[in-house]
Image (cartoon, rainbow, N blue to C red; front, side):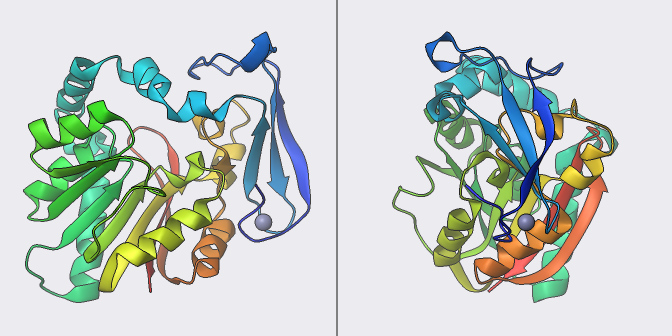
Amino acid sequence: MGCPCAGSLLVRAFEYHAPPAGETRYTFADGQPYWREVCRCGACGHFVSRHHLDEGALYGGQYVDSTYGDYEGICRAHARVMGLPPERSDNAGRVQRLIEFAAHYWGPRRTPRILDVGSGLCVFLTRMKAAGWEGTALDPDPRAARHAEENVGVRAICGDFMAVDLPGGFDAVSFNKVLEHVPEPQLMLLRAKECLAPGGFVYVEVPDGEAAAAEGPGREEFFIEHLHVFSAASLAALGERAGFRLRLLERLREPSSKFTLRAFLSI
Ligand SMILES: [Zn+2]
């Protein structure tokens, strides 16, 4: 797991011997004590996390269990987040920006189709559906997929994005806070390319490590689930190395206080 820019100089920026406040507690293999480090790329400012936590613990049911509880917990969390006023909702800003971009990029288009990878609570697709888009949710957790179908009323695919059979022809593929969780984010972008219709684009949101680092190692952008924390340069490099053209890159501070980078990539 290296830097998206292919730079080879990674220098330790932060070291942790205990979880920072607010981080989800996971069980380390063999009862090992908590330890991890976050290293920064000397070329592009990207951050890579290193630890000895079992990967399965992060991506299996434990993530949903510890974050939302059971299926009913997902439904309650969805209702609570949907109830946020627009000025406090990260999703409202995300949907508005995506729709604005699409309008400039395509002009008017009837019912665009979007695949949301790592749909989770599915608040994003709930809002995209309300805006007239046809959404497809993809999530490895069967509870999240069931919630997308039963409560949100979108098509759902349950499985690993890299392994599951996927329909093609999507006008857009979105990765909302997903690529920072996987060892090789470039492979996910390459897969997304296969699902896109001609003229389609990819929407990516990732944590902004440059802005977060200025506030120190305790920021949520550097929590243990994030194997990669991006810089503007590394996000641009990631897209380009996957064969995309960078159309727009923005940094923002979200209503939830997260430091975030967003990018639109086209083929
Ligand atoms: Zn780099």
